[in-house]
Image (tube, rainbow, N blue to C red):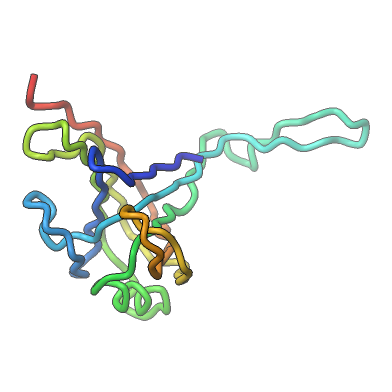
Length: 161
């Protein structure tokens, strides 16, 4: 599982999902959805035990790796209602594209160093629970999952070299 936790001043993550506006004030990500942490399981083989107790690896019928839903955890904000509505289905639940930028403050202009581009995206789950934000305060946090048809990973070289 790939997990990214961004709870310090050196890093941030942002999500652009359709026309849903978040509360980011970052000049490169104005009105994007702010992400506290995210995870995305990567898997290739499954371990199982046969009748003799031997460990076996199974590819689940595929020779290529799989990638599970991207799970995002964040503090509630003005985008939360739209995210809840999207998780309930309907025509508003499908998004042609989602973009996730991982940003470092050490880069000039707070440009992303890693970008995820997801296509044909739906919100598959949504929940609210108490949690701790990046400032250490106990606040309502939300968790939601994004399922997608395809994903592209792009490393963005630093322009400060």
